[in-house]
Length: 297
Image (cartoon, rainbow, N blue to C red; front, side, top):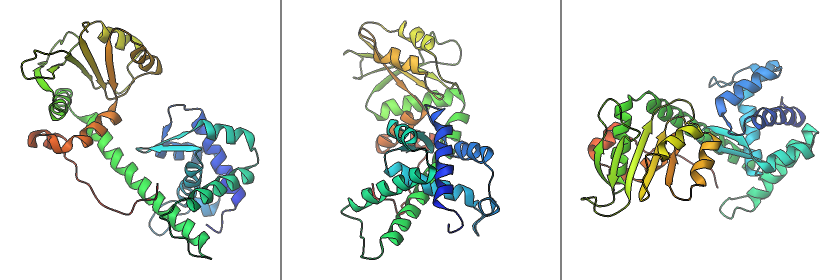
């Protein structure tokens, strides 16, 4: 990266922040990189590839985001990037690109020095920090690729198979599924479950499952709330997630209890309870862990 100055890196990082700050929910990393590449003029060096075929531009930007993340300015989750409130303040306070990136690297080194398990031999601080960034970058890209495949798999799953997957998850979590809606109109409920085998004890759990690629609005959540009784618990699963108003509506309910589950939350629950799933359930979405060196948290 000798052909890229600290100022240039700061310029790219600030432009990335600008793009992401316009997207409060964050952006997929690959989309953010594409938007950044389209908004700047790359040098010949940046536009070139490494021997492994990776474009230098992408690597330079990803490298810089490691510092920003450890500085508390940047969030990364399942391949989605977002700027934190602290990052917004830093962006506003430091308009000079070089100063902006210099502060991010200073905070990265400060974080690294505070880690008791990170070896820092005398005179090898810069080399060690670079190795830490490389490990972090490799980890993040591996996580992004894995999540992209899982996300695509679930979004392409046939609707009723996706409904059965949700029912399998409930069984793995210890609930007793009493009914799954057959094809056709469902009356606002796709799955009925209980906490005991006979359904003798409250609450009754009503589940609506949607495979909409877009977010469910507050009106959609209110329609589901209308099918819940006083002692019911509602679970609303949607591939495309929920709007802010919908999330707020669910949070502020005083008489109706409802939990909204997006694709990421569904996957996290699947992983958490994977050992308790039946063999048939695991075949719906089989997972296998792969061990590799992870960055220090």
